[in-house]
Length: 203
Image (cartoon, helix red, strand yellow):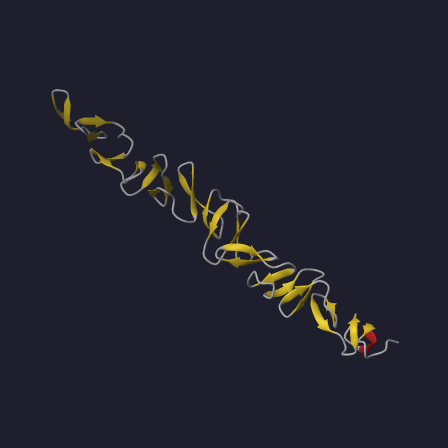
């Protein structure tokens, strides 16, 4: 170690030189580099020669770097950038219901990002949007864009109807045509009529 008056010019082994002072432990934001206290990368509170080991407040540790803010798909938790749940682009926690926005191809609903929205919803601009009434699956909010129907509704011409209109009967979740003689029916044959068209007699 060499010095002039009260100012160091160099340090003995295991001490680091910084601003005319010798440190046994380099100050925060610095690391011991041979006999000098060298500056850590931006945001690092402590570091080695190659990477950060802890970060200052508002920064998060991720793969040896300090990030502020944490990148997409991560959130800040006690100085560390922690991965969001799968499908989240941004989140406030690691649980599946703590998403705030979703990655491309996912739909947001009540804090969760879905690759396929729940029954009654469809992906629309990053959100799970309500289908029209009765639709189990759909492609748009239009009432003629249903692909399948909820229980007790019948699909007819891409709409979900309850009940099926005259001339049709409900078969699971589809409105199927009655026999041509039937006004109403419970099956597709002539003996399944429950009422007849005016020009036919019911027996």
